[in-house]
Amino acid sequence: MEKITIVKVGGAIVEDEKRLPQLLKAFEAIDGPKILVHGGGRSATKVAADLGIESHMVDGRRITDADMLRVVTMVYGGLVNKQLVARLQALGVNAIGLTGADMNVIRSHKRPLKNGIDYGFVGDVDHVDATAIHHLLLAGLTPVIAPLTHDGQGHMLNTNADTMASETAKAMANMKTANGELVYDVTLVYCFEKPGVLANPDDDNSVIPNIGHEDFQRLVDNGTISGGMKPKIENALAAVDNGVGRVIITQPTALDGKTGTVVGR
Image 1 (cartoon, rainbow, N blue to C red):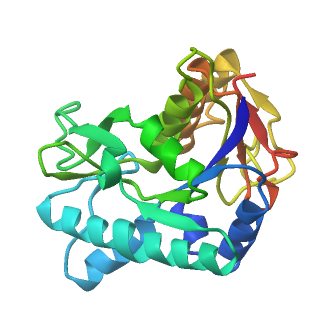
Image 2 (cartoon, rainbow, N blue to C red):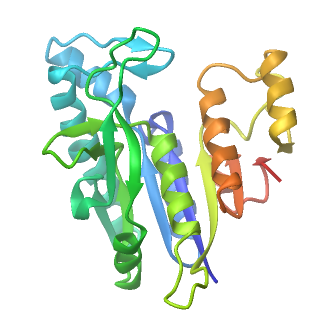
């Protein structure tokens, strides 16, 4: 099997001119095929405000009405994605920017009402076309995927980047040759501003080295894991349960996986 690395980077890093160059340099240094999945929520919120469009969030998830959908499509698929592609090209990485609609790589359905909440044009992933991504990798290209998908009916959908990274990792991990052999040994890296999942949020030296299913439930119950970290680890555990070889939560300077929190195993 060929080793492949999928890195998901959040908006807090993408929009930080100190950390972003560190992330891109570390990403460039990764050997073998690789994929970058990015967020950009803070940029979307700022552009929306500049246009007089109010942002509404529920449990860290953006309510996406028609006006906000136009904003996130412009910001995620345009501004943020193309800036990342251009900066990777400057480092010698032959990157290609994609949304889920491009090449039909990631298709979703519009999220139904959840607990009485209408999230609007938010997508829950149905399918990732691993073969299409594989062809890009064979051509020497590095996909840079924005957090947007489509429903196959002509509609774009705002989609959580952590989930997109997990679903992409699962699809690549389960891709097989005509002989039924697995093609890729997948490592998924969730990159954010901290060195890992912290036992004490005020102490960067309190990284929890490993989190399995039982650890996760205990850490949720005692409040150590909360907020946006909870769905991130849920996505990480789902990836490991579905064939992804390794999932790491770490900071921009540690994409090699030598430090951080290993999830699932």
